[in-house]
Image: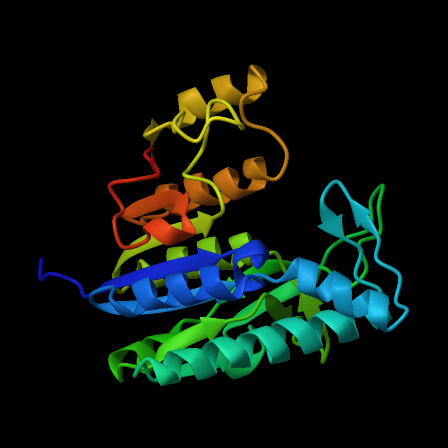
Length: 260
């Protein structure tokens, strides 16, 4: 079998995006990654700040945003505009040709509005289909896609969609044509045994250990959906998933490596 081209997907959280010095460091390291690459970003706290200025109520349930009509306008402005285009501009300044994207662009990520059960999350989207045609074409032209956490439902509505999920779904889809490495980077060194001890990184995390850590309360909160996405990616053919600090994407021997 011929060697497939390599692509690295880096997902960066909102706490890094909103800190200019941390974002500068991350983009400097991102530029140096060999091979094809994609950047997926969050930005929830900036959306919350703008919502407050616009007198739009922010509602969160279990760490997830309730996306009302007004909040959808806010996240579209912040994710698809302010954050996305600033990252594109900074990559261009680094000599990296890039293009800002949402899931609606080129119909690359189709979602459905999350069904109402106990909670109505509003215009929140769950990914149903990924079409990598446009993204693959861009990569082969050495253009770096920069993906905002917005998708669409095919009926004219944008949907607010979890950035970790978008990263996982893109990685899974790209693994049909590429050798894929997925990197989740945030403000911690990796998955920690003790949240206050940066030296307590779990270097290798398999699914059995993951479930044990949940039962023991070592892993909880927002780290659980992130790791669920990581394991889903591995199961669907993604070669490597690493969770690490935003300053460490140039050295993936650090952080936590996810294995089947």
